[in-house]
Length: 314
Image: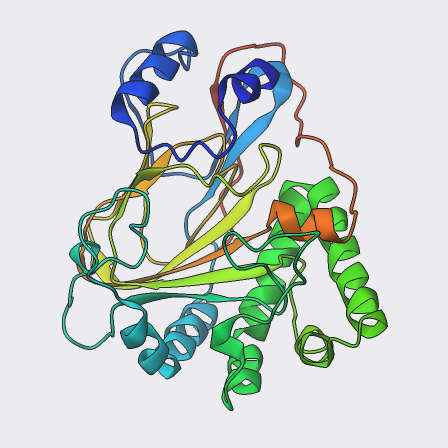
């Protein structure tokens, strides 16, 4: 993973197919063909580094309903998020061409929720963090309350998947609160007091396909935690840099290094919501939170391998 990290350029987005083919030839996953996963598994790379946790059926029906209802409450924000600025591969996340109406019951869109983060191109030390636009309105506290329980579940999952990152995230949130008080950033202090996650941001994505990409603003050793719910079928998450495909049914949870692993989700039949919990490198730099290490597992294999984990009890 160290050599792979060095091979990736800073800010590399994973959208150049020729570049990705070159990386795949240089760093092959060590197995022939594509592996299709449907049961819980952990994907382990060189020197025992964990790069993916795959947990189908991780979310209870109650939690799935909470995510669905909270997303429905944000329909106006989702509607305003969609843009039609042309087919730019770089700024694709809110472009209309990637959204579908589904059954018509769910408003397509993509919004970010964060108590303190930096606008693109406005990072530290020149600029101070801001509350995301989604939380600035009169409904901001209502949204924070609606996402609270799923936020705790995603944080608890990270505590198991990557304990070092969990404590790093918690340290960052506590430090943000202290700095916001010292700098008299009252809006940030207020929102942090109602924020229930060790992650510093959440993307709420409704009825969108996701082209292959990497999360360039993250760190190689960090996991994002993704959850998918809805009323849909025939969904697959593709990880082409590992030559792995995941069955992506409602209730699934995936923890993975979004920078290390190129990933995407194709268009599905029906209505699908993804909540993606993540951390931002520039926010941790602002609070001077030390960089953590990779999640590790004991293995003597230096190729990418998969290990099944126990099924959940009924």
